[in-house]
Image: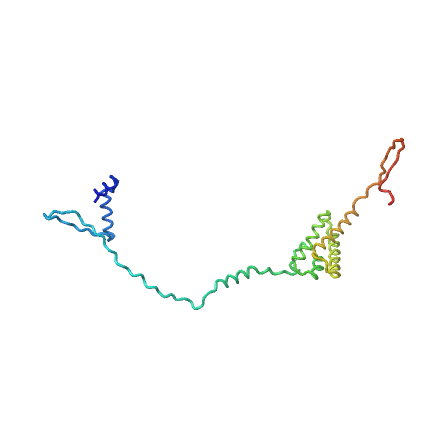
Length: 213
């Protein structure tokens, strides 16, 4: 057999030792059975190798599983969990407002907007406007202007329904008041007439601040 294999594949077959090793392993696994043969004169001839059939094994019988009587609706469970996650956060009342917001301002705004976040947003507008006009250090004056501006907002809300965004309207009132205060505190410009020399040599003085309208 090995000679025929080597001749078929031009000397690239397997060695005798490899063949014997594979035969031995196949016999151990029960794949092959070796039968010794004899010639007519009683001498030993070539061995006969026969492949063994594997027994037909029946598949195991399926066991009945004990299914629970109540089934879990995974879709319903997931929907319930998603609903809990998507629930809006609970609103906090005025008692949860940050300590950075003056209580005088909180006590006024809470009668119209009870949510702590909304009250803080109104005070944030006050801080922005004060910083814009470099007035953020004058705490008492800013608080007074903020309270008056908020009262003006409420009067507007009560008298008309044309206010689309109350917080933006409040910021507009604030900036107008602070701008007016800022301009009032600017140092007065010294009036100094300007000197002009005409072609005729005549000298004239022109004071544009003192012109009567």
